[in-house]
Length: 225
Image 1 (spheres, rainbow, N blue to C red):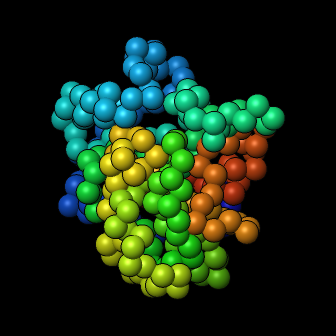
Image 2: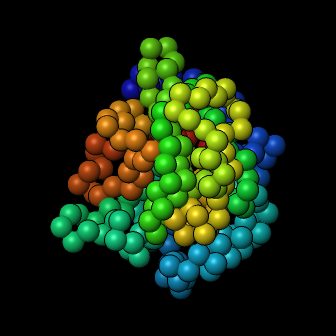
Image 3: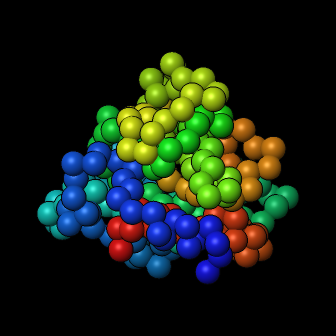
């Protein structure tokens, strides 16, 4: 375990969506390519996808569905963002997804400041995105919040400070969030390089070792399981 992973693991009481929802009301969600139920679903239809999520929540008597870290998915085949003919297919998800209704509050995971933000508006992309920079015990790292509402990036600026648990944003719907069922993509990034307002949330098999190191499991921090 790296020193950053130890730091994340030792940080307690972190939530990144609606703090009033207890983890007992969360349920895991499998969106991997091995889930045969997904083969019956039109993954390019955001309404059908949202119905699938809502049905999963209902069957499990839950309010939030979560999962996806290092999950190989077919979900991205619909988008040229992930399937450039000149490079390896990007289909391994390297963040944590939290599936819940549009408008749900999104919270700053830790004390930090706005590193960057952007509306990544292509189909299959993040839509409105905020990246926070954190410095804890001489460790600088970043958290990314994707699939937000447009309002979330209207009145912020680089350098704005946020406290742990403070309202940062709200979730967007399919019309603005990259054409997905509403959810938060939450990702931890050690070295962001020159990226601004965006960072890969899906990688190829060839890149996986790098991203496993650079993007630790968000569950070290949020501790859903």
